[in-house]
Image (cartoon, rainbow, N blue to C red):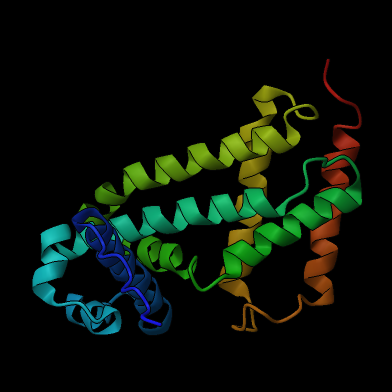
Length: 209
């Protein structure tokens, strides 16, 4: 029996595949090599794509890095939404949510953001280029937090509580002694997450009318 050849990909599908390979390769390079060593040549070698193909889609290294940050942010938020249960009412529920968030923050993909934000401190052009991506991420996080905690938290407090959570988890990511993101959190981190969950639930004990 003759096996039919798979259908040929359209030009749009090939373009999408190339862009996806380049973004994933940039994530890997940033996680494994760091910002300074993530050159376009390194990304192309990782993706198996020519530099000519890269520059057809991303005119500069900076454009590639910013697109990668946007890609990681959207993917992480979508994964988080799919992982977290719809009801977040008890301390245990909030601890579980914080645990999922911590896993996302410590993921190799999220190393993209840490590398770029640290580099942007000394690079005004990169800092300005990243601003729309940072604002988009903030909006996505606020929308997700609103879906999870909207009935419990007053709207005026939502951004403030989110800021506390994100800054705490980012701080843990930067100060983590164990660089293995798959390692179980230590007792201190587990206790810190539970204390934060207890404070959130006790401060907002009832649904807002």
